[in-house]
Image (tube, rainbow, N blue to C red; front, side):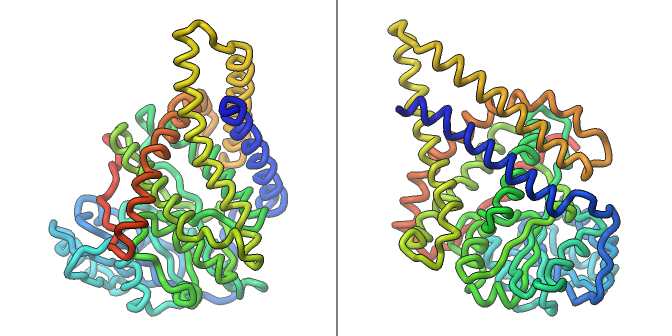
Length: 409
């Protein structure tokens, strides 16, 4: 039974994601101009940049933030109790640009706490959260703001952008490049078509300040602030949209240890959200969130089923009783589906790349072999941690260190 589910679930979900993404493309991306939208108004935008010991990379981020083409914005650096030379970098930056302000927090209490402080310090009604190591496309803000001010945008609570990979020299980085297109990009498009989104991108997302205040700000005890705020907004009937033209370049881990730590945190945060919001299953007014909830929950079930099935197949191999017909047929179907999914995603994403994206298609073959195993192991290890943390440490500040940002540039 577990073996059949292990093969069937990713096959079916790949079909759902591809069909949803193609519908999204047909409705909202096909034929749209490459130039940024002309805005009838330019409301003040506050860019919130949480930072903890980011002196090494923060100077480059701030320099690039000064090159944005949007005419009306401010930058708030939220210094979460840094102990390195971050304050010196910020002092230099404030002298160079009057649009830059700094909120110094005396004690480190995590990204969500820093963002909450930034909400009260921000002057703009629209907030854009950006990681300290991220680089925004010069026109990204126009694409994000357009969703809030266009007709029917009153219900828009957040817009998530399109993160791109900066470092592409190692095998792990190239596999993640394919992943961000073939999995994350497809899922966001498909979920947007279905009406609800699992999470905004933590590296780049725009929020309406009134919506953030309405849902009670960011949860400071959740290890993934982006997933938590997404669910709180949608439970309050705020709309979340996906804007693939709002580009943001980010660093990804290039070591196995760094990648494992990142995925463990993502998985743990997702499970914490499932636990906290489990009551939507019995609330009729939250029924549109149920498919997203079940998709995430089935992903957890699949990880355990994959682990059990793998152990079972190992035992059967020792006995010489492996069901080779099932394994070969299922493995071939999943492999082909993964390649079709990656090809579909790269075709959708190629317009957002300066160079040919097809040259990375070769690395799509590594995705099922490397990431399915890594993802399943992360779920199996993170689920008990999420349950224990939810039961034993509710309300405790979620503090985590910056991820591995790559060994090459």
